[in-house]
Image (tube, rainbow, N blue to C red; front, side, top):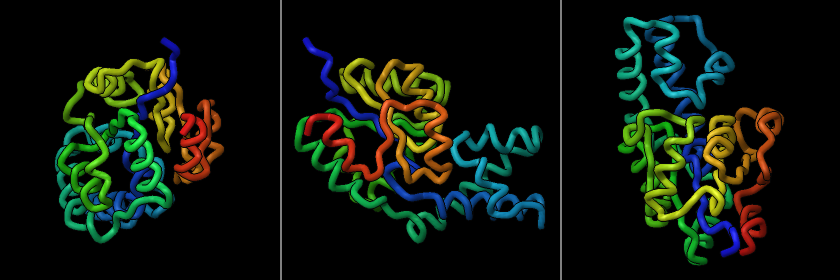
Length: 214
């Protein structure tokens, strides 16, 4: 059996769907609520990627749960106004599905918001497996969520590639033993991803098709 890749794991935010404005405005709203006048747009960019608990607990070990609530309330209320899919994503994912690839999502978001984003962008019909933050003990870059997704898909690391916009995705893939692809439209910038040495950098999601022999 040759180890041809037949499984693609995707991060969701910043990779398949453009939630950057939603996330940035949710952080700005939250920071303004608890730390008025202290945070600007560029100050919240480092918060994209880590879990909300990680980010807010570092600021306020006592009150971080309140902060998470404030963030989530705003995030859900503004979701459909601000979220869209990235160019080339829908067509590429559909093509992979039509070609028999196993497709999963591995995300540090909670599953209810994941479903909202997939429905809004029409991607919900393509993914058989979603591993969200509420399904695991440890988030990426720990390999747990990737290995769980592969297990549910009946696949294995040497048959898989992890696609994401953040170093958590690249390191998660390396830790799990998959191939890795970074997306050049990451808000963190291409250079940031290149530091983590992904196997591939995609300029458009369609770039993954020739890599996978489609």
